[in-house]
Amino acid sequence: MIDSTFGWTETARQETRADYPRRCLATVATAIIAAVLGGCGGDIDADWEDAEALGVQSSALNVGQFHGWAQIPAGTFNSGPAIASSGSQTENVCGRGGDDKIYCNYWFNNVWFGWHLFGNDTFITRPGLADWQDGKGNHHMALVAIKSGGNVAVQVTGLAADGSREEAKGWVTLNGSGPSSLPAAIYWDDDRAIMYVLAVKADQRLYFASNVTAEGYNPLRWSAWTEVPGGGLFNSSVAITKVASSGHVAIVGRGNDNLFYVADGLTPDSMTGWHQIASPAQMVAPGIASRGSTVDVFGAFSTDEASHVATVNPKVNSAPVWSTVPNGQLDTPSAATTRTTAKLDLVGRGLDGFYYVNRWF
Image (cartoon, rainbow, N blue to C red):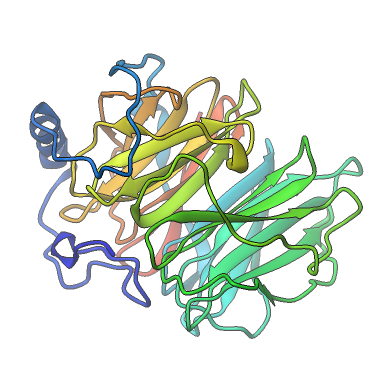
């Protein structure tokens, strides 16, 4: 688990930093980043495989293009949010409500449709979220979250272009999934019609289960759990995205040496190794999105309320420049998605418990 010295943990119900003073401004955080990166090190666990030489990446995300934090109407939450998009004018934001149930809000053409309850099951983590569009313009989404006891549960549903929903198929607990107390991630491979769930288990290793959806989603078709190739030990949740230019996927997580690592592969079961991202050890719970051949990795300190971002090549070790997203105070790590290669959205929970979105374009 994440050392509680750093404030944020993702075990059970402890996902905020309410006991820590809110004392660092973004400008101070930027100075901290520079100082830490100047001497970032520490022994990497022997389970991490060697990677290529460090390479500073270009095409960094310009944080000056964020347009400010805007509150998503009505509703406070017990966890950080999840966000996913399947088009330039659509996205879903989901979270664990005050009753520990999962709620989602659909955004279409600049309108939020309101929070919708997804069953009466209760959970101990924030959800993971995948969102995609079929040939008829209908949107589908898949949710994953951890139940009490550490079991991974999945729900799949649909959303028509007018905002109406198909009947949800209910939460399904995946066999052999526990125990885990870290939020899980979910990814739908539209090229191969396969859904993947990723979860860090009690042994700190990353595993996946898959479901072939070419003939529609069947909750009885989930595979057994298999470790993601490349090894590695993790002490936080992971995040996954499709690399826009290659069609590969990239996964980012925090290793048990408290540094960020990223892997790239055709699918989650074909990763070729983990590459270190030079990142301050105080950063937790990474998020990820892609606008091209690179990925934008988001992180947060336990000592401030800002989001920080670095753009990296997921195929090599990197020593990127970390930038601070201007303004805004959050008390959970942020999540990110791209609607197009020129539109990226960031969402986080504010100090008031509401969710806020910040759009980059």
